[in-house]
Structure formats: structure tokens, C-alpha cells
Image (cartoon, rainbow over all chains, first blue to last red; front, top):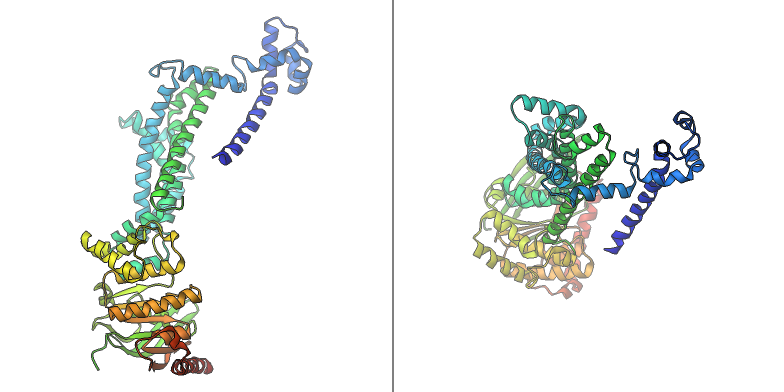
Length: 306
Length: 259
């Protein structure tokens, strides 16, 4: 356990360090403007003149202003402690039912994610079985599955929302469809590889038993494909979350992580955007973590060396 | 002579490849009687494995007639007339040893009680009693191969086809398994087709040794063993054993000579 944690903590510490260092030059011009408005003497003394000065030089010439780069209300880059504070304020400090609460918004996004992931995974497994058993499907479906992933989801998402909206379908389902669209692909690719992983000898053995194709699927191909399936599920679940968030962006959705990011952007509240971003990242990490645990559990059940 | 269990008359098999046709088997004639232990020996490419796969209905000859239990090999395969042991044990890593032996029984629809009883019996037969709940990775290579033999025996087919089953094992383990296989054959009276490239193994095990040679794959000699059915390992030092081994070696050399 410690072996895994230490490298991760090291990377986190390095990232935090870079972030903390970057806050000063990123915000120094804003901080200088603010300080001047508050009546503090700043050099150079006009915003236009300050634009001519590089960020680091400006910070060096105004050491008193530096500290305030970490506490701006609307920073270009918020400090880590500001993001953590905003996260705390919008999760623990408010009722989960409040429109301010990231738990409320998180659930809105998560429900679409899970529904879309379920649809995508089911579709992916069904397609993979079809592709493995039918040469026609292999030749006809696989190229389309690949082509589907070359269309930028940002271009496709509004069309899906609008078309489904005009059919009277709103809310959860359109977002789930976008999630499914992103998550079915890794499942198809992984499962096709997994279902084809048994070697010729294994397949010959089943022929000597005169096993039916369905028996071959249940007894050999499915169990053999499980490691591939789990790798795909971990990619698929995070893709599904991205899909749900992207689905919230073009419609001006009022709830969900995507909506919070949009609100923060449009109303000049970077902290809201950053908190939503981190909440989404944490959600994705937890989802992937759950599948990693399921993977280990299934590997143990299937006799893997402990 | 009683009706042969396996009968080949003028069997031919040509594979079409990108480099032109490959003559894998040419004019193979052979009868195998019930209870025979027949070894196929020859250099790689001589078609010994291909012939075994033809008997099993895994390949289809392009000429001649081949019958297994008076049926076509394809029908015999559908009737589950034989158990097949491959070069590698090929146990499913996600099933226990018992679960692996149970695999053909599940596929063939044996009742649960019958399955349990048969698993126990064949694991006893290959000396693996008590390993039923172990996973394959917990067993040595020799034990895994024994488990795969148990799997082939589980559904009680009268014919056992073995394709270099001990080829990947070391000499000492191989000796031990050869001894056990003879004992098993004596107890069950099965008809066994056995592919090998080891002369001592072929001579020690077989009632008949079929010597084959490549390009095209064909039979060059069929040697009836004069050894008694009861064979301790020491028999390999007897003059009789050495004489048969010598004849096999001569046959192999002759097959090579006309290239």
C-alpha cells in the first residue's frame, strides 16, 4: 500500500508546488489594479504602463502586493486553498438540496452518467459479441464504430440535445445518450479483443466436445474477456462522465457540473468553475476506483494469485 | 481380425496455402483395433499431428476414406467418441482443477451428481485426488497435464487421442507419466492414438509404432511391438526394447534418406 501511495503523493506535491508558484505571476496584474483601487501605491502607477511590464518583474517591484494574489475574488488562477475553500462551502457547508450545493449538481450529472454508461456498456458488449460471431458485422460495424469516435463530441452534443428536444425528450436521457456515445467505444474495442483472446487450441478443445457456439461464449469467451472488459469499463465510465458534462454545456442546463462551469464562466466567478472542475475530477476518480476494486474482487474469485 | 475402431484407406490431405498446395498426408493406410496403443512418430512436418486431427474431425481429408467407430470422423466428433489431449494442458485459469475436469461434463449435459462422481473418479485415476479445489497455477506442469488427461477421460469415450502430451515436460516427469499412462491404459482398456517425437517413449508405450516421414507426409513403417503388456521402466534396458528402438530409428532415417 505504502509503495503505491508515496509516488502519488510526490506527484501531487510537485503539482501543488507548481500551482502555488504560478498563482503570483498569473494574478499580479489583477492584484496590482485592485491594490491601486484600494489606495495602495503601486509602480508603475497606471494599468496601461503595468501592461508593459512582465509579470515576474511587476511582482518583484511590488512585493507588498504579492500576498494578495492568493486572495483575489476573481483571480485568473485561483490559489489551491481558494478552490478547497469553495469546495468546502458548496458541499459540506450547504444543504445537499440547495441549488448552491455541488452534491446536488453532482447527482444531476452522475445520474445521466450512470444511465449513459449502462446503455453504452450494454450496447458495446452486444456489438462486440456480434462482431466476433459474424464476419458481416465485423466488416460493417467496426469501421462505423471507429468513425463515430472521430466526430468531435462538442459538435455532436448540441445536435443530439436539439433533435431529442424537438421530439419532446428532455432532461436525463439526451445527456445519457451522449454519455453512451462516448462510453460504448472502449467497451466494443476491449470486448472484441477479449472475446477473441482464447487461442486456437482452446477453441479446438471445445470442438472436440462438440460444444455449441453459445456454450463457447459462456464457458470460454466471456470469462477470458473479463480482464479486457474491466480495462474498458474504467475508460468507459470516465468517458461517460465527460459526455454528461459536455451534454450540459450547449443547452444552458441549470443543473449539473457542466451548468456550474458555465455559470462560473459567464458570471465571472472562476472559483465556481474551478470547484466544479475539481468535483468532476474527484467523481471520476471515485468511479474508476470502484471499478478497480471490482476488478480485483473478480480476479480473486477467478483464482488469480493473491 | 475384429472390426477396426479407426480405419484409414488411402487418406490424402492437401492444404492450400499462398505458397501453393502443401501435401500434408499422402496415401495413408492404417487400421487401429480396439484396445490398441498406437504411437505416431516422425520428424516435424511428417503429418503425425495432422493425421490425429483428421481422426478427431478437426481437419478433413481431401481424399480417401477414414472411419472412426464405423462413422465419419465428423459424426464421431459429434457423438463425442474420443477424448483429446493437447500438447499444452490448456486448463482454464479461472476454474479449479475440479472445475476444469467438469467442463466437458457441463457441455455434454451430465447431471450434477454424475459430474461430481466422475470428477472424483478420474482425478483418482490420474493420481490427483485432493487437488480438486486447487487452481491450475498452484500445480506443476506435470500435474496440470495429468489434469488435462483426467478432463479427456471424464466423459468415458472409448478412444483417447494424445498429441505430444508430454513434449513440454522434463525427462523424469515424463518417465513417471509414461508409467502412469500405461497403468491407466491397462485399467481402462481404451484405444489410444499417441503422437510423439521421442523414440523411447513410443517404444515403451505402444503395441504398434507408426513411423512417418515428411514431404509428403506418409507412413514408412508400422512396427508391431513384441514387448509384453506388463512393462516396468527397466524394460527399456532389455535387448528386445533396444531392437525395436533400433528398427524405429532405421525407419526414421530411411524416411529422411529419400529427400
